[in-house]
Structure formats: C-alpha cells, structure tokens
Image (cartoon, rainbow, N blue to C red; front, side):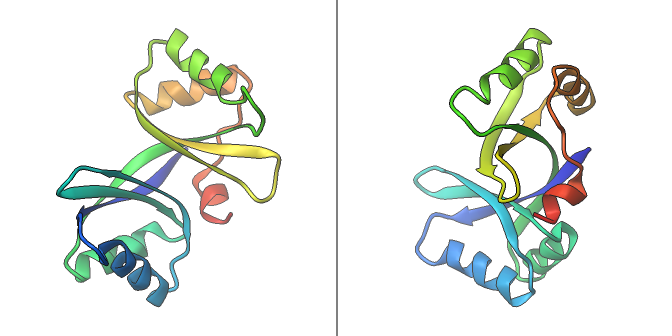
Length: 143
C-alpha cells in the first residue's frame, strides 16, 4: 500500500524545475502531485507520477540527484475538517508524520493526502480502522 515518490535535489536557480518538467514530458511521464521544500540555495522536489520507475531512470540519466521513497496515500473527505480525523487517528497511535502534501482527485469528492510516516504498515492499519480509504499505488498512478 505504498506509493513511490520521487525526490529530486535541485539548485535554487531559474529553469531547474522547468528542466525536470520538460524531461518528464519528453518521456511521456505524467505528474500526479508535487511539492517543493526549499532553502536559499537548493530545494527538494517531491513528485508522484504515473510511471515512477521510468521517471527515476530518466532523471538519473540526465544527471539529477534523485531518489525513490515509499509514502502512504490516504483519501479524506474534501471539505473543511476532512483531514483532521485522519491526523488525530495517527496521533492517538503515536505515529509521527515527517511531512505531507495533498491534492484533490478528479474522480471523487475526496482529497488525497500523501504522508511520509515512521511506520507505514501500522499507519495503514490505523487509518483503515478509523474508516479511511488507503488507495493502492495503481489507483494513485492512474488518476
């Protein structure tokens, strides 16, 4: 139940993000979600794409510093307060969230939240027991 996330270490200079987007487009890889965490000199671009292994290879071949990380996706109601019960369930189970980002799915009235947690298997169990859907990787990649 883990989704492959691509992390790209980027210099914080004009055109670097465009280069990644152009490269993935040239390989027919579609970006499903992204997040950028930056400092003054560099940034970490996190991507969920439809074909993570192919995107990883393409970025590596072009000299980008890139890694693959397993993250968890959870579907939450797309309304005010929809995320809070999922976060409360994880907190009550003493699970730590290292980071998260979200996007709204086209096919449902739900938002998808991508989480990096300290114990993915336990987090899946906690979220499912709390009534949340944890989509499969194929469901995420095919959005």
